[in-house]
Amino acid sequence: MKRTACFFIASLALSFSCNAQETPVLLRHARIIDGNGGRPAENVDMLLRGDRIAAIGSNLQAKDATIVDMSGKTIMPALISAHSHIGYVKGNGSSPANYTRDNLLLQLDRYERYGVGALLCMGTDRPLIFSGFRDSSRAGLLPGARLYSAGFGFGMPGNPPAAAFGFDKTFTSGDDPEIAKQINALAKLKPEVVKIWVDDFGGSNPKMPEPVYRAIIREAHKHHLRVAAHLYYLADAGKLIDAGIDIIAHSIRDMDIDESTLKKMKEKHIMYIPTLSRDAFEFMYADNPAWLHDDFFKASLEPGVYEMVSSKAFQDKMRNAPSYGTIKAGLATALRNLKKIHDAGITVVMGTDSGATPTRAEGFAEHLELQLMVQAGLTPLEAITVSTKNAAQLLRCDKDYGTLEAGKKADFVVLGQNPLTDIHNTETIEEVWKNGKKATSQASH
Ligand SMILES: [Zn+2]
Image (tube, rainbow, N blue to C red):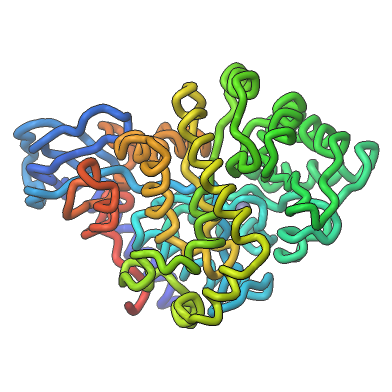
């Protein structure tokens, strides 16, 4: 049995490498949004050789190429979510016990079906992925979206995310020698960034003290690792920026951002991940949104979640929760802050917090995020750049991904309708390509 499997993998690898040299693919007459933010190229061809883009231009020719007519289609880079969580949800629940190889593969496949080519799991990964899985996934050797990891993050004892994800590595003092030890252990896993939670979760929990995050940032920087902070309050954003934070991993939601914070963010090249859909999912179900009964939304869910979120009991509970109004107002503030931050020339990066709970729909969330960014005042083209090129820059994989240019990897989405005329058209996915090939979903539906 084992030998058969090995033989199968060997022949697969051989056929891939043969194809890479022998059969170019020529996609003709497409509209191409390349991710760089310029106007799309109309009626152009894209030539693929192996897993890379060989050329983009008019009337390209290639001997023996497989020709694919893309008339009327729009091609854009695969989306990248720089803040998601993977492996925890199953059915209506979320648990560290669900973090298995099979569940990870199922969810990476789901992201890919939704045109998400890569995601950064923001600080909730477990040892399982660090003995090969993450590296293979990132290199495109496993099916589904490419998995990038922030390893395991740091919160406060018993605070909501740390407790939900089963993490117990917490510090209460900046002098704790465990900080250097834990960052050292984390650095060995080669994470993209270090994740910290700096929040009192609506006053219900102790917030990570400033000396603790200062020590974490200092130790992370010794290893040349960037630090990304979960936060909520403008005041914390200011202190974190002064402490040397690199990435703000959620929107500032309590107040409108002021000029001096904008200036500091710009000067220090802070990257900003708004995760607008995270907040939307916390109250929108109660408002019966237009998308609730769409197949595009429903197909992204774990079994039982649609029945739950469309039930009167769930919607009533959400609407009557004391936090309902605050969360709604928080999103409105987040939308205003996003526009100001984007206009100030700060690098905004797409992230959603999808997969942290079953109601933060993996794959669908990334499209809702694009729509919310446009609602905030970004143009569809700007929202797409944030979700492709900028996200690849955050993951430092922009040499290969995030834009469609000669020499880059051929990871892209084929859309039936133009998303620049209506951002909802990113949902008209007809094909997802990865490594220069049309990806075939492993899922039965
Ligand atoms: Zn998160």
